[in-house]
Image (cartoon, rainbow, N blue to C red; front, side, top):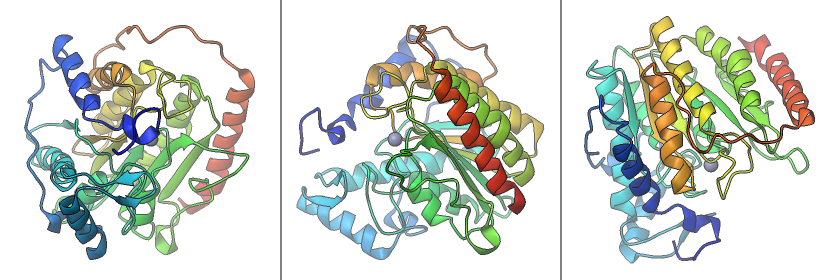
Length: 339
Ligand SMILES: [Zn+2]
């Protein structure tokens, strides 16, 4: 990225995945996992969801080696290769779950993907890793329906746009929402035509704590997933809602990321879904990213919630919790008539 910190763009650096992986190794978290190197995807894979113009712009700008592709999206000489590896990681994990080789996969790769739309890179995202893997897996005869859970601090606008009219893809995004200025990610965005009701936004207020995310899981995400009954679950796993994150403004800690892992494991066991594929989105404090991912992995593997250093007691604000309970009521009121 062309700027030094504190520009938010500068936080999306190779240190994120390097420090997180080192932490996971040191803590022995990856003992029962199979570690696979991400293969490089092909530009034609990106074309499954992106316009020719977007793919060729990234190729060209990567050759030039600098410049701006969109809001908070900058080119560098290694951009194309890195972005294709990030796509490849998610696709490889998806293939391994579909073939039955593993039940759950986690792609610890960057750059993230959930902001890039069909034709506009933005928000540190170039190719939409999860969307590409989703479209690709839908070509498999055994996969007809995919649910995407996006718990990144920010709205997964790119993924929503790409699948807005697709009846086979359900998207549930829980994120921070600005109720003073508004913006995309409102619960009124439901999907279009026959796909109405497949796009579900849970726009929580700033500084939301663990309990509001739990409420979102219990009251919206769980019934929505059971209703849709996907063949596979994709997870846009962004960890920037962590209270120590320099970019997000939420107030959760690693415990909630365990809860998401534990929840997805239970849903997969209780439904006909083959498994889940997690792809790293945000999470810009490299020292809380490792523990947060660890918590998710331990939840996914059926372990008790680990007690980690970041889980310190913090003041709770009942007004925030009440406001979010009302948001969840609104979400259900709006979306349920379309189920
Ligand atoms: Zn984010």
